[in-house]
Amino acid sequence: SCDYKNTFSAVYKPFVFCFCFFLYSYRSRIVDKIDGDGDGQVTKAELSTWISHTRRRHTTNEARKRFKDYDQKGKGGITWSDYVQSTQALDVNSPDSTPSPTSVIGRRLAREGRRFKAADSDGDGIITAAEFTAFIYPDDFFHMAEITLEETIEDLDKNKDGFVEEEEYISDLRGSSGLDLAAEKREREIFREDRDVDRDGKLSLEELRQWVLPPPNYDFALAETNHLIRETDQDKDGKLTKPEILQSWNVFVGSQATNYGHDLTAKHDEL
Image 1 (tube, rainbow, N blue to C red):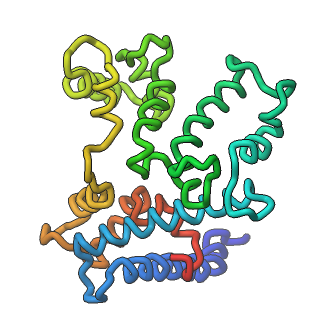
Image 2: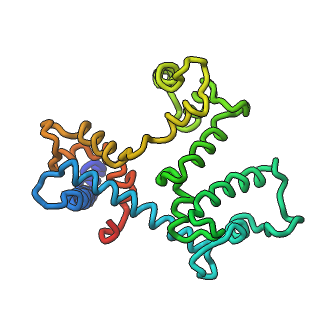
Image 3: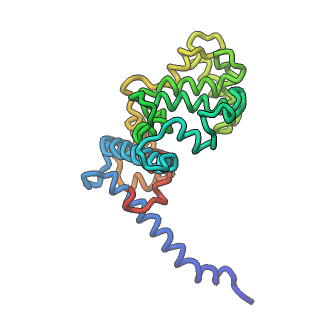
């Protein structure tokens, strides 16, 4: 009879070993890049700088690729008409092709039109590649803050009364992250104790502003850095060694330090 276990071990174990070695080597190179001065210690400043670099690289590259899809004539800028024509195959100058404001497409275009106008920082009616980055990543730009707030209200305020009630808040979280009972209980506590400042059972525009929009000069990269160090710094010296990072790699995969894991499939020279 055939010994399947021994056969599997003999044939596949070398491949498993090679794969694990490759994975370790690739992760190790990422850590080496984070460690800017190469001293074997990743400091808070180095990690924060790397996270900022990773985020900026991702948004810039993604915006550049998508911008080319809309700027098909290579003009270096796109008008609102160009955008609508590319995404919906509609002519905004033709009354016959204008969708109803209450239709799905009509509501989407109204929303995207507001965002387009806000992203057009010089108001010339043309969005450049740099302005297009703000259009598709409004959360990253301070001048897009009000649009971010407005879109959040649109998404959460299902009964359109201008407020976000507790059930609307919880319903959105259920849909986006799949809350279990314990998590839902905790989120309800957060809503009542932290979000709903005046304790009236709903979030006003100002309460939403405090929740959705970061305070001036808020450093997202530094906040993420503090979280990662808190979770992975085993000897609590305020720095991270390569072993500490590699042993807690799952934490890094879910963070901006690896672009939420996307850098694990990127080419080495793209990092």
